[in-house]
Picture 1: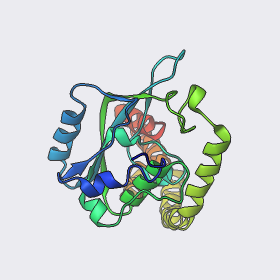
Picture 2: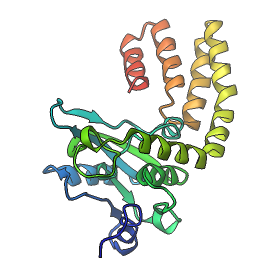
Picture 3: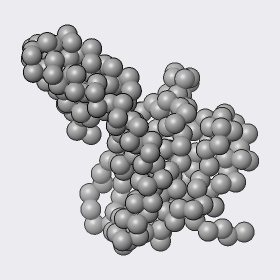
Picture 4: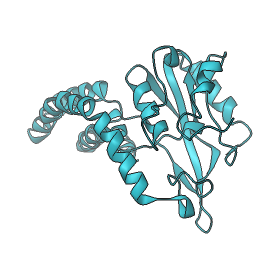
Length: 236
């Protein structure tokens, strides 16, 4: 029977019997090789609870663009950047209590991934084999004619409030480590800076502030390729 938007995805993970679950809206598209690429990555990275990739975003009248990036929890607390149809999720996370929050009018997928991030590692695959026709549907959370900015902003505020305490704890744990890295950079202590940056990345993989500092450390030591790679990842 028809169900409201947020409760609609809930029965799927409970009914699934395979190791991994995912979703696909009827107006979007998996290209050939999408699931195989994700499954191969999951097999190669068995410790990852979520394997995700890029989405190919289509809005009528605009050129296609990529949506998605590697996991950084500090960034995920601020904004949604994983489309549910780009991800394989280990069904063990359902057993640990990860569920779509029916109190949210939108962004239940963003909230879902925030729940998963409290328990699991994420692995990013740089493939673009899912097509998101963002201007179709009527959620208001897509693009073009399917974008209701006021509704999206209200739902964004709800998700951020829900996770504010966890976001603050992560920020508090990162602040002294990043300060130590900046201090070491100011003294040209590149070894000390690199150690502190690695400690920050252990707390928050792909943290953009830590990666920006790492780019500076690598550049100062003449490793321009490594500096460019760190800067590019920081700017995703």
